[in-house]
Length: 323
Image (cartoon, rainbow, N blue to C red; front, side):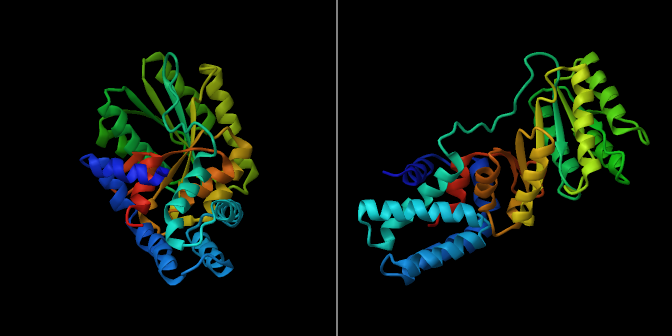
């Protein structure tokens, strides 16, 4: 029995929890668009030939999995077809899902949990371009950790965008967590004072918001290095996480962002927002395959509880459950 069949059987036997249901609902656009085309492909092709593979390639690329990723995937699929002497497209359905899963896993242990400090506050730096939802993500995560009885501090190092400080403060008040801001101050200075407060006052989690940066703005990108170095002066092994926030609806541009940020700072994980708003859910697979950076959180809706820890099995089930 293949990986996908095992997942389907497991979820059928278990009573679905609320998180699994969020995956199902949040991935419905991708499932209806992407998976329905895969199903139609099986119906319209009675044999596995080059026409079949060309049609499959187009479907996968349109799902934002990426050209090079798709080419590698098709090479592996062709090898399996030849090796196992598969001739019926129906027999390829589960194999397609299994091989897509392999793209994400790539013989690695998937780490989707936060990296916590061994002692003192865990410092999490949030980076990304303008408009991807960094501050909103911070607010939603603040609620999660507050509910886990963690003492949370939000630090507003986005001193560039008008209204950024007010937005962070609004989230802090809404979720009943503390904040540190200093409007007009240098971002590195804000980080120094904010992280110092987190250490001195015994906070468990310190979330640092930074200004949205275009990946082609070298001076702004270099500022991230300065911020990181300042944080290390207070807590040598911090930041413990650098989470890159990407808007899933931007598609392949999101991968370009990830590669650019990876060059300038040690990105440890990706937060993929607005996954519910795109029919191209394959971006999850492409980002991991192209960058090697694990997706740690995904946005499956606008509600405060719709930001979920990424679970590859729930993702595969939510995307392909009707396939």
